[in-house]
Image (tube, rainbow, N blue to C red; front, side, top):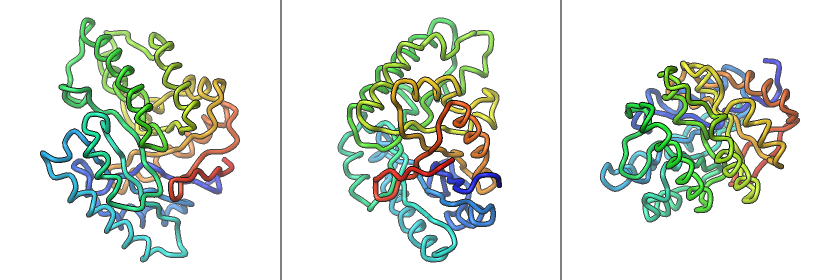
Length: 269
């Protein structure tokens, strides 16, 4: 690997509803690849927390991550994380989830709007797509002001699925004003922006967010960027991280961020 401090800060194990492999398998893959660190960030979708007993999955993730940390001591840095989805849709659930472990890192994400399914399941057309996106950015601002996370995950998440219907001709450029509002709020609250590489493995073909938005974040004063594969199986650990580093360098970034005990550590790219 070209880069010394390659770190994957967004990964999912079998303790996520859509994860495939054990924490040990993810960490072993990261070690075999020569990664500097891996953060396990299993899902906690707060709107599903009580109906689907998500607590047991979080407790399993914590247990398995701490076990893996013991097994791989002195070999690779393993950080305990959580992906806190839709925290403003059930603040009590968010509070309880965050009390369960001594997390190193909290990702904040928005997979679905209030009263809607995950963006993955929605059908888009010229009439509903703009309305859904406007609601998305409004709720995203609410999530940022709620202030429970360290890094904002996959800012352009809905576009990953809208891109599957190119006839709609909807791009992030059309939402520049709303995206700037989000980026400014992250800067104001000293939060990180995630470079999520999953889009490189999907039809959209770019990181989430893309290079133009990452450059804009830096222009607006953004300092902290985290990088994650959003892997849901061992084979995707570290996928696209080097590509993300090259993009960040083109945007003028010299460092990226890894979190330990909820504190940012700036590492050279």
